[in-house]
Length: 71
Length: 372
Image (cartoon, rainbow over the protein chains, first blue to last red):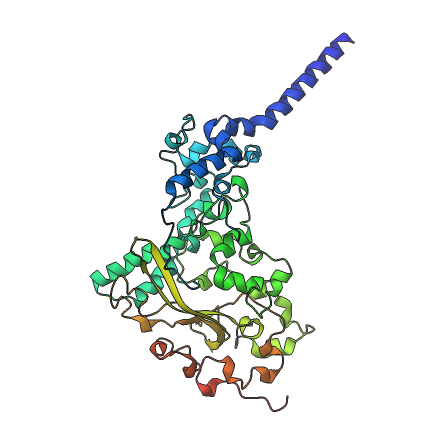
């Protein structure tokens, strides 16, 4: 009886760890990216950086004002 | 299409980590840069914004080998008909032709797409920006990708955005572009086609509407009478946009500009300029394209010396199909109705020679039917 309990417990531990491992494979690879992933998934941080960039670019024209009509 | 805020363009949805295929890849494997560098400016050194253009073989091609192999022949990437058409019209004098070609590359070629600019981001030519936070889109979203580029003509026609005209009936049935334009057509098949109508896997109305020739189908008689005589669009399109006199160049600050003088809504039936076994109809809808003798004038004089070698009224398949249209209400709505046909008087004098094979001679206009 005791042996059966041990086997069931081991089986459960194995199944749970397998499930957890499978579920996090993808996450691990992208998350271990550290700075690319953490920065680009953080909207607040991106707003801050893009505002900085916009400040630097202030006054620079983005394209020609002469474009007109449908194309 | 609503423009994206700067941060929205580069925001990545953390859900990408759950993508069992693409989530396995590290950002720098496709985009380069230094993932271990905390300073964003330094980290972005060497970053490639679109790793699928011009060569997708390492990024997308590592898994999607077959698609990447044919990539260069996808008309969305190569835009090869542009070059072919311009070369036919261009001045053969080498130094002049070189300038025309450089202008084509600088202007016309800037509207290309790529794997990434359909499945991951909006196309660069319309400002770019990630779709759904870089989650890979198997089917590119119609209004953020397809009609973002094909907007002023196809998009407005299909969506019914031209004042006084209805949307395409297929739009009302919730069809997106990819319902008819399948991946095989978009991805290219290794052949360098002269124009989009030749593409083997292009859409055909009869793929879905085969039953129109069945004995018991509605209007079977009309469909048989007109079979191979007129294209489907001749009876089922509404008026569509025609553009005239495109000029382009660079302004004082060095930015590219495009000017299109006139655009108007017209419906014109012309002689089929691309008549073939595949397109045997004598009469087709024709659309005026923006090209002009002076389109390249900013860069070189007489750049399109052989302008008249191709028509400016081109075979068109307007995307504003309706079951009933003004011209198919009755037989005589079309028969004997000169206004519908592209006559000499409808063509600007400077474009007459170019369109001589498309203009309908008056004696070819079908006579009014007396029995109606």
